[in-house]
Image 1: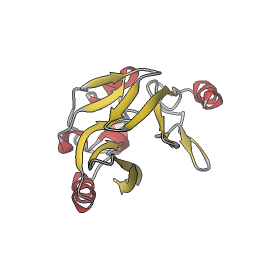
Image 2: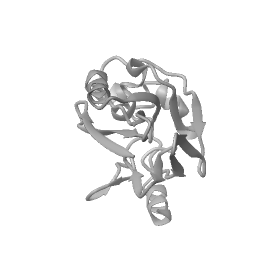
Image 3: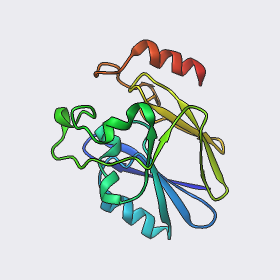
Length: 170
């Protein structure tokens, strides 16, 4: 497994490209800059198969449509990939292209690509459907957990109590 980090968008979101030994990949949180993400894939000889959004805020989903891949998101955030009023587009960004998720994730599900399997951990708090992906000694935490803090809980649908409970489970 290889993991490539691509910083994208106005808010400098960490997007990750996770590749299997077969040269296939999936993308975690393509917040913007689809061209930059495609260049990383091309430069590393990778073919992307799907996208996993750790939650539905626009800075984690904006390039979903442009990349044209199946999108996986937790069932509690499914409306956030289609409704700009729910994904903070109206607060921070301009136009938004809605997407219909290919797969709705739940706590305990697995996301698999070739020899790679990541477990879905539902971590509500930043959004109702925030998730972390854990596997192969790596945790993709979206905005649940930062190096020096946690995700914001002052947006509609967020909860500081729930994020604290989620962190206690990790």
